[in-house]
Image (cartoon, rainbow over the protein chains, first blue to last red):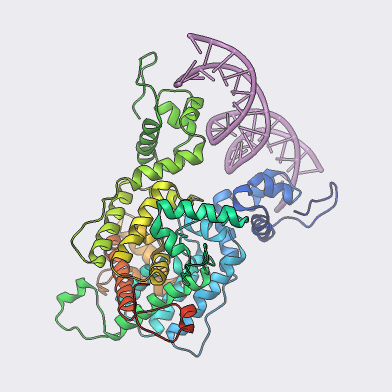
Length: 242
Length: 242
DNA sequence: ACCTGAACACCGTTCAAGT
DNA sequence: ACCTGAACACCGTTCAAGT
């Protein structure tokens, strides 16, 4: 939120500066407060000046996604596909966690950008390099879904615990009355009858749990030479690399 | 888009009529065109009239989600947990496919409504009834993520194939040049060298593929008496229902 | 080549008033 | 109790102009 001093001569705008300022501003004030007008003000410029560098707000959002995707580390070499893909996805997750708005914006984009396609193409290539058939790679990419980006839909969004422990206990009793099953799992893995509220929940653990479950499943199918039902028309059930 | 005849006496508005009209209008014109103003016009009423029945637009969106979630079938009885949960989730998917905007709106809600909590509580209860430990149920719900609702993030959104076969072939050649791995899996499971473009991709198949992979993984962990790392402090690795 | 200013057609929502 | 009308503080974006 560095304001330009009126009249100070500044470096001329360019697309890159606009995008980086947009990313920083969204990090700062939240994506819902980022408007062409607020971004222009941040840059010490009139809103219409942005349109020389970005066709419209949609293109701005695409460009912001590209900046974040650009922060994902390249693939590590010298390991098996599973380790390499796991590390790459966890790197994507770290990039996204640095920009809390990014997962929502990625979800909302109606079409992928070239930078996004580059990343996806490279992940697909990692499965292929690991010997996965074209067929299995196709399904496996769909099964990953948003997890290639390192995020998943929060199932119980919001509802941060109240600070006051008494209010916390009261909120929990109300939850337990109406939603006993949710209350039970909300207490966390320890499931200690003594404490009213569990230690909440470790998002990173949950992400890796699901990611590893999927990668293990993929590995098993790959080893079994899995082919989709459509292919079962052909008699040979033997595995292969497509 | 039924317009009220000016001066015609209509049934008085109520919350339910407002929500159902909003759902129908979003189905019709798309969620991005649904505004308090367009909805009011649809109902033959001035925008401010809606605020007697709904506190603001956020509450309207929550109510619309509740209408859709209300269309999900109750659990089927008399089967194992896996079949029952599978069927329930596929019913949720059918409800969401009837309202193409619904998945995006569900994702966007910052807090769950009571109706949403009812559904989630009931799915949690289905795992518990199947003998899953509290611990495993917790992780398994996170691993499902948006798949409890019957949807996942589209990895390659947009880009419908051009109608003209020649333009299609050209688009594909361009894709193949820059993104060979994506091009390969985009051709579909058949991977027929003769045809330029595959039959696209069966979203329902992809959804069930990933769902079954997860459910099978859950089943295996359950049978093995899986416990999260935190619990591994305790020596006994035996399974149980928590 | 790059930025500006005024304007347009929208939003969600407030307030005070009408019946 | 329910609906209205005018207004406010915002949006993204156009157009025609400035330097």
